[in-house]
Length: 462
Image (tube, rainbow, N blue to C red):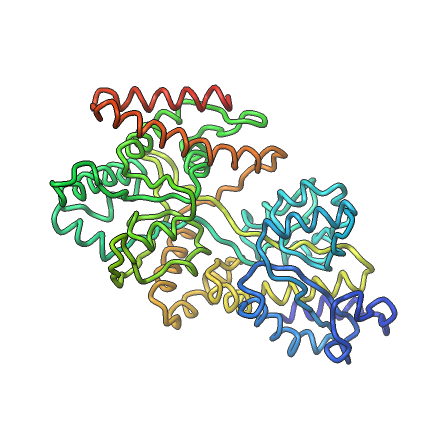
C-alpha cells in the first residue's frame, strides 16, 4: 500500500477538477463527491447491483485510501461481461443512444480486440513500474497485453475447477469401488462416467436404459483446447481448429462416454445439472461456486442435502498439468493525467495482497499476485465459514502450485469459433446418441458413430 501511496503522491493531483467532474457527467451525487478532487465511474460484473462484494470493497476504498487522496470511485453499473462487452463497443463506436464510457470497466481481451480504437485505453506500463508488475503472476498479466501494451490489469482471476457431489459419489463408490483419484486424468474420469451410468441403470432393472449422466462440463471447447495444448500440440491453425494426433486421445473417451449418456449435453450450466442430480461431477469456472447449491432436488421432487468437494481440473494421460485461465480485468479509459493517476491509485490499492485477498475470497476468485497466494490466502481460507468455499480455495492452492495457466490466443474469430463449436459438438453428440440407441446400442457401432461425428467436426472447422 505504501508503494502506491508514494507513487501517487509524487504526481500531485491538480488543485481543482470540479469543472470537468460535474455530477451529471460522472454519475456521482454532489454530496458523495464533496471533498474529493477526482470522481471516477466503473462498470463491473462482481455480484448484484445491491449485493456485490466489489461494491463493498469500493466503499472501503472511498472511506479510507481514496478519502486520503481525494479520490471517489462510483459504481455506475453491475451487470455481466457480455452486456459490458456490448455496451463498451456501442459507446466506442458512437452508436445512437449508447451510454458514455465510464472511467474504468471490466473487460476480456475480446472486447479490446473488437474496439475500433484501443488507443483510448490507458497503458498501465506508464503508471505501474517494473517492480510493481513483477508482483503479478506473469500469466495473469500477459493475458492483458494487447498489441504490446498492458491494456487490461488483472484484479481477480478464476480458472476451471472440478466440483463433486461427494454425497452421491460416496454411494457409488461404496458399491463399485470407485475412487476419486481415478478422476485425476480425463481418461479415468470418462471411464468412471461410463461405469456410473451403467450402475445407475442397474438400480432400476424394470426400466432399461435409464442410466444417469455422471459428468457435466461447462466448456467443451476448453476441454479440447487445453487438452490439445497439454499434449504438446497447437489447438489452432490460423483462425480455425487444427485436428492433430492429440485429438484422437482426447476424442475417443469423451465421445464414447457422451454417446452412452454418461456426459450431460443439455443447454444450461453445470451448476444446474448438479442441483437437479442430472450429474454428480462437473467442471466449471471457479467463480461459479456462488451458484452451486448444497441441496439437490430430483425429478421426482424429493430433495437431499449434499456435501460439495472441489479438486483441480483433470489432465490428459501423459500431458502436462495445464488449466484454463479465466476472469476478466480492468480497462481504464485514458483521460487527463490526474484522472489516469487516480484510477491507477485505486487499482494499485485493490491489488495489494491484503486487500486483494479480502476481495477475492468474498467472491470466489483467485488473487493476482504471488505474495497474496503465499502470505495472505492461507489465513483468509482458514477463516472461511463455508465448507464449499474452503474446498474451492484448497483446490485453488493446489492448482496454483502444480499447474501452468493457459491463456487463449487473441484471435478475432475466437468468440465466434468457441460459440459455434460449443453448440455443434453437443448437438452432434446428442443426435449420434439417439441414432446409436435406435440402432440397438451395439458395442461394435459405438466407435464408428464417434468417428463419424469427428469427421463432421473436421469438415466444419478444419
